[in-house]
Length: 139
Image (cartoon, rainbow, N blue to C red; front, side, top):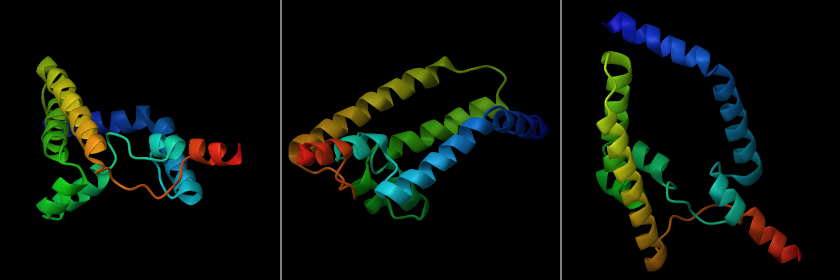
C-alpha cells in the first residue's frame, strides 16, 4: 500500500514537473521584484482572501496557534482538508466527492472571513504597493 502511494506521488511529480518549474521561477522572480508572490496583491496592492495562509500554516506547524489564527483563521479548515485530499489521493482507491463539497464550503468561509476583515479594516499588510496603484500614481 505504501509503495503504491509512493508510485502515485512520483507519477504526480513527473506529470507536473513543467508546472512546478514554472511555479518555482514565478515565486523567485516575484519575490525579487515585488517582495511578494501573491498575484492579487501584486496587481492591486492589498491582501487577497488567501493572504496569510502560508504564514498561518508555518505558525500552526510550529505550534503557535494564536499567530496562525491571527494570520488567517481558515488555516484550521484548510490543513485537515488538504490532509484528507492527500490521504484520499495516495492511499484510497475510491475518490471522495464529499471532499470537493467540503472544499467549496471552506472556500466560501474563506471569502466570508476576507469580507469581514475587509469591512473591519483588519487585512494582512502586503509589502508592495501593487501595479494598479503605481499606474494610478503615474497617471
